[in-house]
Length: 196
Image (cartoon, rainbow, N blue to C red):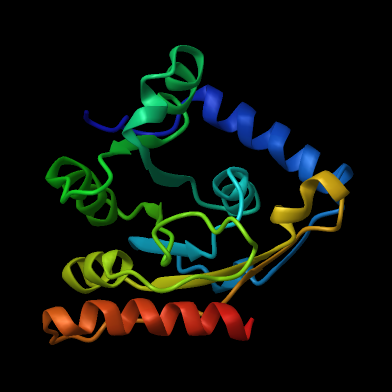
């Protein structure tokens, strides 16, 4: 599946609605969006505790945000229709999905912002998990900066606790690298998230 060339009206409408919800219902506080480099491809890399993390991460940014979503979500009739039009593209989990990686590299080459979770999957207990190599690999090969993002309290949305999102200073991949550097960079990003 090829990604859309540019964001849709539905994307902007959804971003507006989510921003209102996060501001007025969850008293969301955002910090550091000035740390996100502009006019370049960039990976936005938050910790992951909730299905709401992608729209939360994107709705406070100046740039449009693109993201991978598991293939199964695209097969759900209404949800699949919506996410196809809100800058998502599918990835098959448990395997190296070359189509998803081609989409990711194409976006970064075209100076877009791509969301990737350093843990690779959602934490079910609210504790930051272990780093996976994916973010580091894409950043090294594409030679783009990675912005660590710390999200607080999306695992407590039922309790209506205040949500806080912090965008950290970008981390740059090494110019020369080996496969071992992929996981090292992902680990570094995760440590930067914990420090925010």
